Length: 226
Image (cartoon, rainbow, N blue to C red; front, side):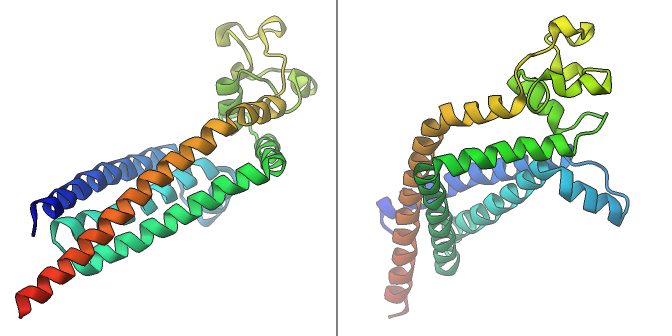
């Protein structure tokens, strides 16, 4: 193979090696967040209430699978694996562009979906630490619509308070999580969309590199057979 194609091969290998490490980390962190499952009822409850760890595990598995084909196809100079990697990367890129386009054209609908996320977290909250607590801690908010949502329960979760060690009405966050969460996505939607386009551009470059490598591998083997 030429020097340029050999460079492309090792660039693809290193790039996919880093992606595979990211995929493994996502799976590990998702598994760490996932509650212990001891029965079928536990599985059903986990699927209903723990979408974030499940999403992390699935996303990590997809990244790991695609990266596996990329690494093996590059280092083993396998035409079949390189083309499989190209196809998977192209499908991922198209799906990502479709999501960015949806966010661009259906921003209002997208914000409604983000509000529904908080609605589901609120409906499935427990006295134990859950995703409502995670929202309240990260967004500095309290309750679905405001801190008054907890008034009938006679207590405020520590995640609602500016000072968890002294959780009183004076230290409770006033704003509700639904409005705060929707505003966050509204303000950062442009950043997410442009970041998605940049990542899609990187994936497109990887797709071109993988196609060039696969085509060169095929031509090299044809010349070698003659």
